[in-house]
Each structure stands twice: as C-alpha cells, then as structure tokens.
Amino acid sequence: MDNQNENQFHKVMTRIVVGIMIAFFVSIIVCFVAIKLGADNLFQMDHDIETKVYEITEDDSYFDRIYKGYSNGIYAGKNYVDAYSNDLLLGRTTFVENAVRYKNLIGWKIYAPGEYNSILYLDHGYLASANGKESKEDIQKIATKIEGLRAMTESSGADFLYIQTPGNLDKYGDKGLNKVKDFANYNTDLLVSDLRSSGINCYDIRETVYEERKDFHSLFYKTDHHWKQETALWATKKIVAYLNDNYGLEFDLSKYEPENYREEVFKDYYLGSLGKRATLAAVEPDDFILLYPKFETDITFKNAKGIDVRGTFDVTYNREQIDAENIYKRECYLGLLSFEGTGLSSVENNLAENEIYILIVGDSMMIPVTSFLALDCKKVELIDPRYFEGSIKEYIQEQKPDLVINTYSTTIIQDYYPIFDFE
Image 1 (cartoon, helix red, strand yellow):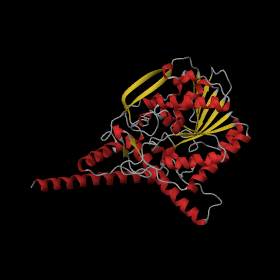
Image 2 (cartoon, one colour):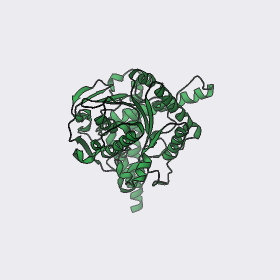
Image 3 (cartoon, one colour):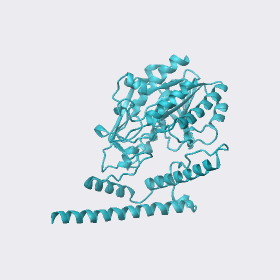
Image 4 (cartoon, rainbow, N blue to C red):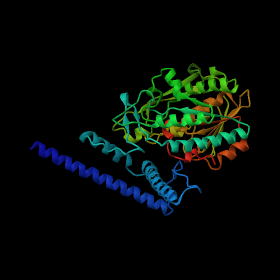
C-alpha cells in the first residue's frame, strides 16, 4: 500500500510539473510570436540579444550558407527564448525553483542544458559548465581573425598583446567532472599555440595562476563563471608587471596592492548566471565585495548607452544593478562597469601622469580589469565585439590607441564568430 501511495504521489507530481512546463513553454512561444509581430515595446530589455553564431561570407559554398543560416535561426530563437523567459515571463522563477525541488525529491536531472552540458557541480558548492571539443581548423579560423586584428593594429602604429584569461575550470586540476570532460582548456591551448606560431605576443594568466599555486576555484564566484573583483585586482597587477617588462611602460605596481583598497562586503548576496539557472532551491548565494581605492581618484566614465559621469572610482559602478532588491535581477558583476549589453565603455583618469591610451577588445572577464588598469594611465576602453556598432578595425585606426589588448576567457573560445568579428 505504501508503494502504491508513493507511486500515485509521483504520478500526480509528475503531471503537475509537466503541466507547469507546458504552460511555461506556451508563454515563451506567445512572447516570441508577439516580438516577431512588432510588439517590442511590450518587452523592454536592458541588453541586446545575440542572434548570430556564424558569419556567412562570400567564400561559403551553397550548402555552407544553408547550414549557417539554419544554425543562426536556431541560435536566435534559443536566445530570444532565454532572454525573454529569464527577464519577463510571469512566475518564471517560481516554476524553475519548484522544478528543481521536485528534481531533488525524485532524483531527475531536469536543469536546462548549456551549450554542451548541463550545470556541473564541483566541490564546496562551485558551479561550472563544460565546453565541447573544437576542431583544429575552427580554432585556426579564430587565430586568423586575431592575426588580422594584430596586423591592422600594428599598421596603425599601436602595440598588440593577446591575453589569455582562465575559465572557471582548472586546466591542471579539473580533468573529469560529473563524468563530463571539459575541452575549454584544450581549445584554448590550440589557440595560444597558433597565435604564438604566428609571432603574436601572448600572456597566459592560466600559467601565472599555476606557478603561484593559487586555490583555483576560489578565484571565481561559486555561482558564476566570472572571476571575483579581488581576483581581477590581482590579475591587473600581473598584467601591469608584464606591460612594464615587455612594453617599456612604467606603471606603479603599488596601486594594485590589496591593502590600498577598502572593501564593502555584501554577505550571501550575489547569484551569478549559473546560480540563476540552478536557482536558490539548489545553491546558496555568493558573498560579493566591492573595492574602493584608498588613494585619490578622479574618473570620467562613459559608455555606449549614454552614461557620461565624472567623480571618484566608484562612478564606474552601476549601483542600480548591484542594489536590485530581487536577487534574480541583480547583475553585480556586470554592474562593476555598467557593461551589460554595452559594446563600448571608457574609463578616463583625470589625474594620470602619462598619456597612455589602452584599448581592450574582448569579453566580460575584463570588466573590472578595465577600471583598475585606468588607475595609472590616461584612458582605458573596453569593446565587446558582440555588441559594438561599427568596425573595430576602423575604430582603432581613427582613435589610435597606444596599445590594443585582445583577450578571451577559455569558455568563449569555440566556433562562435560574433565575438571574433573585428570588421
């Protein structure tokens, strides 16, 4: 009788969850159709939606064009669904949390999958996701694009550096997780090798972490794939030392010492992108720390969304994002540079004793680094090619920075072209 009751309970709960999921997906489809019919004003987003994973070029064969067009359509649809269901769907959080609780009850794995695999649960509460294996040919395509950016940069009179930042899976320590093999570092090693073979100067921060024997996972938030702001400060000091040694610069390393910063600590406060997928039903929030220089600062901060403010270092912080009441709406990490969906952000140091202008082209791992790096040079800008309007190569030719840094996390080095599009 007990078994019968248990089976009946499972049947009822399964029907309830299936019903909720059907209603959930119907709501998503209604949103998607409404958007396509021109109801964008009903669904205001704070960020653009990525709609392209492949470039379609004149050199592509007819079948390649069909395949890439089809893939772009699927990718665009998936991202519309993700963005609008995450931000706007009524009751979405409750649906997902209840689904996770039910999963915990019966042992099902019904988390939304990532690009390659669902969420990976590491030791001590850390979350991650794994990347699939890329072909050598696809990695070489990426390297060729970066080589083109280097050639154009140097022709404009600027120096060029490629910086490899780590993802949140350890190249040396995370060989197999949850019976899943991650290929992010494999793909990255191929790219760095290709770039060095072509004569590009590469600084691989993964090796610096290994050499200093740091506790790898603690460099990152438990619920997010980004590194902590404290880690970014450490990384900035390493980058600055590298620039001093290899590019003849004279940055003051003391500006990147932890004791020169005051901390504002938010306990159990931040739920990163991975944590939002898992929900509070399965994970606990991260502590979040904001750093403030103890020394004098005078910063002008601008971005492509129309922000233009001057003040101390913290004008780069978007407190509206960081202070959001709903933990699922807080974008603490992106709020470090008010960078969500923004193609260009500029941090100018009005107290700089030099005229050095650095342009960073890359992903969101450099959000806190951009602000820190500007503490000892005239201006640092960060461009994310996915959202930048116009040609990055033309921008470099027009603005004439002294140094262009191209950089990506290991998690983004895959057959994914918009972020490697510099034209």
